[in-house]
Amino acid sequence: MAEKSDLFQIKKSIETCIGEKVQLKANKGRKKAFIKEGVIENSYPSIFIIKFENEYETTRRVSYSYTDVLTKAVELVICKDDKRILVS
Image (cartoon, rainbow, N blue to C red):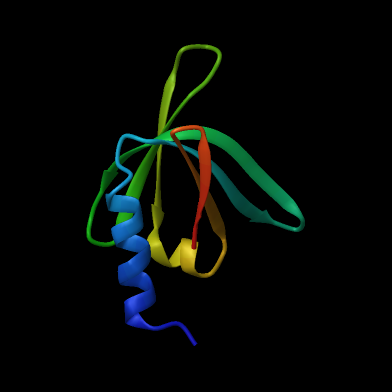
């Protein structure tokens, strides 16, 4: 069972990586997944914001909760100094 300390650890991991490039995989249900690269823009008490840019030079901001990461509905891989770190 998930504990409060697990959520706190996920939140701290994401807060330390604000401004870093990440690869995000979000499950959309029925074996569908959304995989994009973006930047962690900001972190709030219950959610964090990822900024995506596409080939048309438009910016899209999407928010996810820390429980999404805990329940594995969202997987974050942080691309830091040519290393890939999985946040879970």
